[in-house]
Amino acid sequence: MNAERFQTITGRYHELRVAVLGDYCLDRYLEIDPARTETSIETGLPVYNVMNVRPQPGGAGTIVNNLSALGIGTIYPIGFAGFDGEGFELCHALERVPGVQLKYFTRTAQRRTFTYCKPLVVASGQPPVELNRLDSKNWTPTPGLVEGLLIRHLEEAANWVDAIIVLDQVDVPETGVVTRKLLAKLKGLVEKKAAIPILADSRRGLRGYPPVIFKMNAAELSALTGASQDLTLPDIKEVAGALARQNGRSVFVSLAAGGIVGATALGEVQHTVALPLRGEIDVVGAGDAVSANLTSAIAASATLHESLVLANAAASVVIHKLGTTGTASVAEIADVLRWNSQWEQPASPEI
Image (cartoon, rainbow, N blue to C red; front, side, top):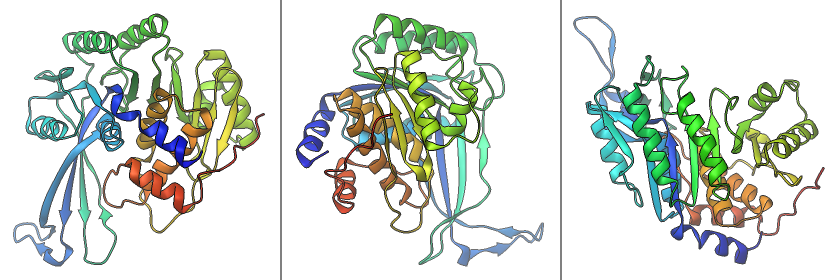
């Protein structure tokens, strides 16, 4: 990739309309000043004084944040929040994200708002330290009424968006947005609207998903395909390539410090290495930044190699933002590419 191609690709972002279907949560950061720690008179336990509360969209909302940071023109969140305080905070946070339109976002009394409460010890001159997280989740199946609204919103959004990203964030099947019925509808959309890039990522793996663009890690690739759990890089490239040809859609495998492998349905397989570290890191949100950048690049007609370079650079930006679920802007990505002399990085040989 060179500077001219970078500008051409990212210059198209403001024209794109992207739907983000998935589990939205509230990331609520509680910033604690350790210098103000007290002892409870009643219990004798330490009392942590919160000096600042920082709410921001998490889960699928992290992908939304990254799309906005890239300057995507219109972003449609498709998901739900409860009629609770956390839901109010989440919707308010989403409303403030540039480019976001909430016409397909559902508020419902039948669900609670998925929340990650993250206490952070913030000491002067030191990196923030995260304490035990406090989570609020739904443990029962998503009601049929909510499920029906999500399916209807997906159908409507698919009529005019340029790309769709799907994020399944819940640990218990059928308790979030991406249910079996919704996947059946997604399968129908893949068949009717084959030209729309649809990228999916699920923390429980992509077994049972229709043939969309798969984004996963090496362990998930092994579990999905039945391959060895000790895959070498050549193995990963071979297995990802076979899966992409089988599905007729691209496959991306994140390897953390090992970079990213990408494979297309036409048999092209490439690997880009991760960029060097520039200090302490926090990997939270890196995978979502990769999903947002891959999808945006593909929708903007980038090649496989260009998409991988942009996603790798975005991940490098995000992991160096401590104490937050970070994002990567076009300017930040450009700076990282220049700093690492990546403008003319050659592609690794195809297998």
